Amino acid sequence: MAVDRYDFAIIGGGIGGAAFGKAMAERGASVLVLERTKTFADRIRGEWIAPWGVAELKELGLYDAVMERGAHELPGFTRYSGRSGTRRDIVASARPGIPAVSFFHPDAQEAILNAALAAGATVERGAVVQDVRRTPGGAVLSVRTGGGDRDVNARFVVAADGRDSTMRGSAGFEIRRSPAVRYTAGLMFEGIDIDATSAHMWINPGIGSVAYLFPHGPGVGRAFVVLGERSESLETPEGFVMECLRAGVRRDVYRAAKPIGLLATVAASDRWVDHPYHDGVALIGDAAGTSDPTWGQGIATTLRDVRLLRDALGGDDDLDRAGHAYADLHDLFWQTVLELESWATTLMLEAGPEADARRRHAMGLWKDDHSRSPDVLISGPDGYVLDEPARHRYFGED
Ligand SMILES: Cc1cc2nc3c(=O)[nH]c(=O)nc-3n(C[C@H](O)[C@H](O)[C@H](O)COP(=O)(O)OP(=O)(O)OC[C@H]3O[C@@H](n4cnc5c(N)ncnc54)[C@H](O)[C@@H]3O)c2cc1C
Image 1 (cartoon, rainbow, N blue to C red):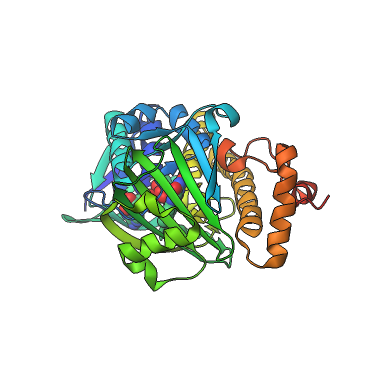
Image 2 (image 1 turned 90 degrees about the vertical axis):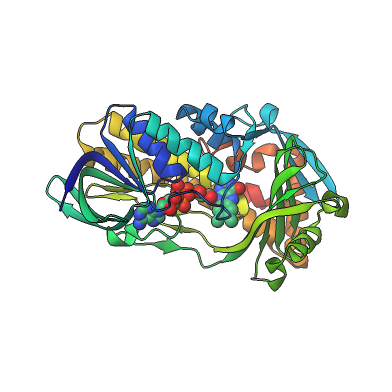
């Protein structure tokens, strides 16, 4: 059986794995990216990167590659309450000072994997990693391809195998999860009538539903609906549009719209690993922490992981110490994102008269004092301390 040896073996060539492959290959390391699929297909995944994630994309030198592959800048974020929307200029008002970005997810994956290849990484498509075994000074991966099975040796393994990661179990990490499950359906449309320079979010707390539209350009865009319960209505494009209207979208937005491609629903809760590194294996992206898509943070957190791990490994010859340093930094920012998401879910999505009163009270206070509502989901987690006093200020209980 042939045996390959690399500095870094990366399991999964999605946005996280490919971005990390590029980052380490351009630092001169020998890198192997193993990706299960031969071509990227629509799986209903993230198509909006929050501005703080776009800053990470730029920092990783991937912005131009994604833009050249058809990504679209969104300098606005419009949130609707009832029928009326308020457009926020996120370039002027959020810390990164740059627009958000939307794209067709498979195109972004392809662009980033090509960037890894161009930087000198070896990329294998149609290669499925079966398991990871620790060895003195590294690890061995069992890899299955059309041509048979073989072992790959690596000094350091990065599992970037997504939200259903099997590698985190294989590598002995314990998975934590929040009990609440929400259901997100996605569908692309052409012929939509909406401002193409803004992301759009509608919330209907009465039924706990959220609708999004992320234009990919004039008239074309990705729509998502998030519901607290699985619904048969999300199985047809007509039912999907009906759920968008129930969330508050004006009928004329979809009057001339035609669905394009796959319609599917994904069940999602927060799932994560504390300290996503041990014994030569690091987890990044969704494998380290999958957040509820309701708040659109997954790509930003994935890109943050890539940068933190790259910098930790670049600054220390001791790979084990670098792995632990990465995991400490990951936990800090991840817990901030998770905490803010849980506050937002409680405040924005709970139904009933008590929840309505709490919302009115808290959001009324925010109007006069923006600092009550930490801008984690747009500006990023840095600098925010989400302790008990911050929680009281958020909910207006101080
Ligand atoms: C419905 C939905 C909507 C979302 N919306 C947003 C949004 O608007 N904004 C946002 O920021 N985030 C959003 N997200 C989250 C975002 O899509 C993810 O956080 C992001 O794609 C994670 O990237 P990743 O590289 O970690 O994982 P993935 O993109 O899942 O990549 C994992 C890769 O690993 C490969 N793989 C898996 N197992 C193996 C194996 N054993 N061997 C080899 N290869 C393997 C897979 O084929 C895949 O290509 C959404 C998620 C969902 C489900």
